[in-house]
Length: 193
Image 1 (cartoon, rainbow, N blue to C red):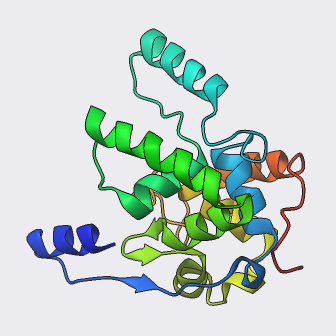
Image 2: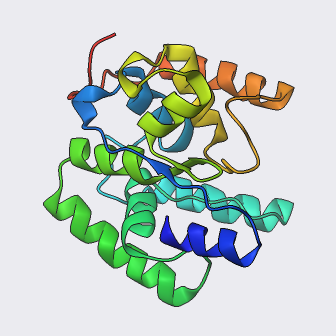
Image 3: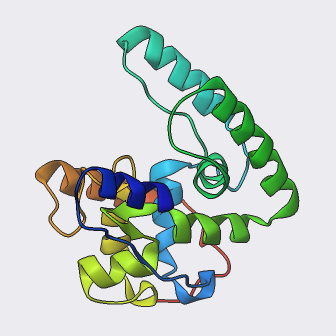
């Protein structure tokens, strides 16, 4: 969050930082399901690293020549909370170390809660409650299933993809995530809808 504020100041933009921490039980039950469906379908099964996703990413990177990530929600949480943006072997090594530690010390519910409160979900908008307020005029608890799927659809690049003004591509991703959500079990610890 602070790095993005510094970048905004360097680029001459007005500072935007919207964030309000909410516990997992104050969020719509659909939000963790949507991000699991979109970002890390084996989140509840792995211990921080999804070796199948990493192998698939390496294969696609070789075949198609474009970078595709294989990071899990746990790895993204480690990066967002403890590290800086960018790509380097040092940062990747530290990310693996912190991922191992949080998987060892935190429950899956805690990892999800930290993830959903720390990720950027729009330009200067951090966490599920802030995006609910600024993009949907509600709070995290009252986000609908389709709103959660739309938010999850932005996560590869939330400054490029805007859940408040979705493109046709975003609406297509929202539908795909909605279908995938049917195969994700209810995530314990969230508010009912």
